[in-house]
Length: 491
Image 1: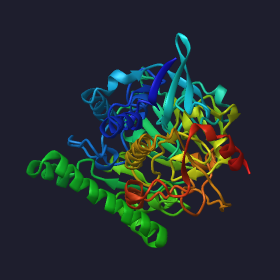
Image 2: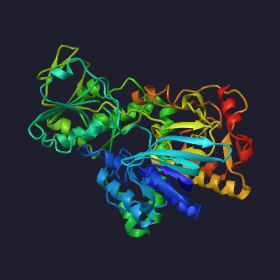
Image 3: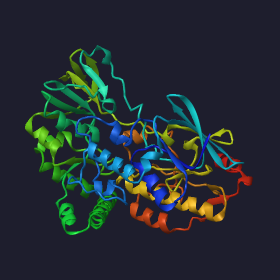
Image 4: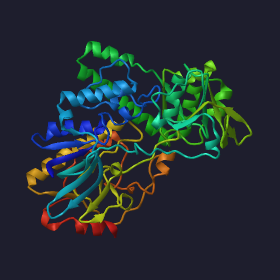
């Protein structure tokens, strides 16, 4: 069994960032990255649907240590994949990746203060040992998206599939295409597919809040001409962070005003009757993630007549398309289900402590990155209301602080312990993919430190500066074991 100081699970945006921070702040630590797939990039290598791009600007989705220097601020998937790959290659991180190693379970032994991690490989199961486990496998299942079955689907004579599993050989030129869904995936596919398809219809049960933004940031490109890359990057990054933070807080404190503002912006993009019928959600802005439309491409496709939006419910599929509950019918050759992700905790791995399985849903989250009673495990889970990497970078910095603190104390175990009852608090977003996963996600409280604040400015200050010895995060010798913590967490 190979021995490491740290095992990182996942070689996507988070995992490569974690390795960089580890090399930078914990030099000399022996580490490996276990990646289930055959390539670096995670989401940005998995998703291959037309137009795949970020729904966050790259000045905040990019790493805090490596500037984004491409012209587009709202980047295409291949450019993001290139950025992650270059980061890995330039830092020598790619040499530490074990591809086709899907982690299936991890077991902590409190007498040795080490994790035994089992990965499934083409050659069979392999085991690894590590003092610290850093889970950076993302937040959703790569193999199992939310893929609802519709009545009569088998009768459809055309092609139907989920967008997460887009066939690379698909030819949709001249075809009638229906995209089921109204989130970021659907809004990305529609304008690109409309360029070749005979017609594209986005079929939604209910509207989503959308906002247009230029794909190219003129101020950022000007700043790069006048300033060094990193200085220009940080300048634009902070502008965007502060703007995002302001808009989000305005949406929480004065939702009607923000709803009206976005509606006014939509009315500049589309006719009033179209906005009223298809772009007025029942929820307030930022109760679900705001959908970004770069350069108004989606709106332009609708205005051109190459694409259309239908707000209705599916009654059933038939041979030629989709019958709606309103009595209408949409003829189709291809139906794409952009029906969402399936959230997944800890990369889908089974985790146990001294032979006892850990149920994340029975545990409170510590500062959005550890589970109560679970030692030597830190997981990356980004923001819902801002760019994923803002949180990922902070989590990795925290992990390095903890690792160095363990070395300084010459103590092998770190574990967050809850000593008093707390009240549960609902998660921030009402999005379907979040609500569907409530019975699997860790619990959070309304009080610190047992919650995920979703506040980058606050997190940045506390994660970097607050003392680790906060009365909750406990540093223990192996002799005390983690089993009492497990019992306490179950009370």
